[in-house]
Amino acid sequence: MTLPKFVFGMAMVIAVVALWSYLDAAGWGTILLRVLICAVVLQVGYFLVVLAMVLRAAPKPAETGKAKTAADGTATVPAKDLTPKGSAH
Image (cartoon, rainbow, N blue to C red; front, side, top):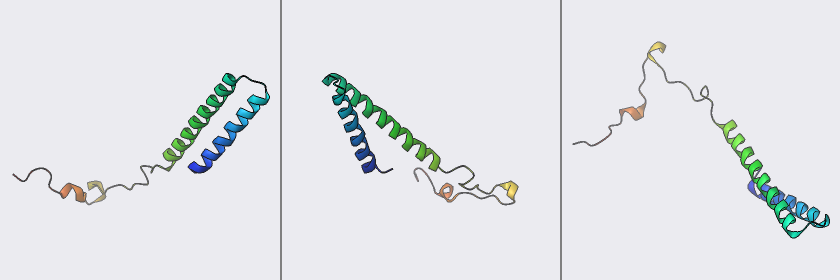
């Protein structure tokens, strides 16, 4: 779900909660509290959904590919390890 869709949906849900509270003859403090609780629950839910999507999309160790080892018959050294590091002095 994209952010604009989430924001629109969140605004609609909060509006429905506010309207429901108003029609329920709740006081302004109760309406504000219900709207605040609704907004927090929606934000936490959105965060957990995005976190789950990120964790699910992370590459698995088997997908990243293994470097060849001496057991495979050839030993390889990553190119970044051949680059000199530190001072030349």
